[in-house]
Length: 194
Length: 194
Image (cartoon, chains in turn brown, blue):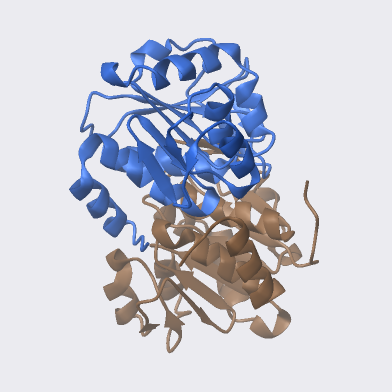
């Protein structure tokens, strides 16, 4: 049963080759926290195949989506999931717009290789961010103040390192909307230890 | 790309209401480790809906499966996923048989509420096991030597606590087949810290 706790809505983008745990851990934790999360295939069809051959059917497709109905866009990593996300102009336009409109309550979260998408759009210049080691140099070259943390939050940008930090990433999104106590309590409930 | 490292095969069972992260974290880590993992719907059809409304299509169904072709059966938790697994006689027969045939290389792994299935089959009497707090008393009543650990391995039985320990659970299965160094290296690769 889903008990909604906020009017904020999160859109989680799924591409062929996305890292399924990085993606679905966010969906799982937001469901538990009562934060509406819509899974969005970036393909013409709703069904995608993850980087580890898991078949997942999303709630909707990018083509059907009005990003403005959401307050946060979440980009999971994985190869070729990340380049497949980067190849969607409609998504890239929304990501760039959201990242620059923190004052309107818009936010972007990216994990693993996906922070490289934010870097490529020029959104990390002078911003604190973390990422997977495979794209560290790329973030450095694009002016990010890169950290070695599971999760880094700089204003309306949330970044994380990879599959092994996916729970910390999801809990950071819960904390972003519902505060520290809610995230801590949820972490305890799922038996998560840092 | 999947690079197979062992002839051992793992069957991962999916029911409506299963906890998707507990299930798919195992599939993800085994894929990375090169251990063949088949996802198995316990329904007549391959597509299930998880406890947090994620739609997943399994590789096959329980009806089409010959459990003897596998060496390990994995039971994720979630409600009503766990009772839905317990309601499958063919699966319960295989679980009971596998648990008692460690000498034949058969093994069973269960996480969250699913260790209660092993308890209900009388398989945990005198065995060390861990589980979700929601079924601790049930394991105690059925004679388990219950631990408060992320993961407990007793012979051919691997148990774990819940979503927040799913990576530790998956890595324990990797260690079971490929040894400590392989599990440690995979944990490091995904940026997992205990």
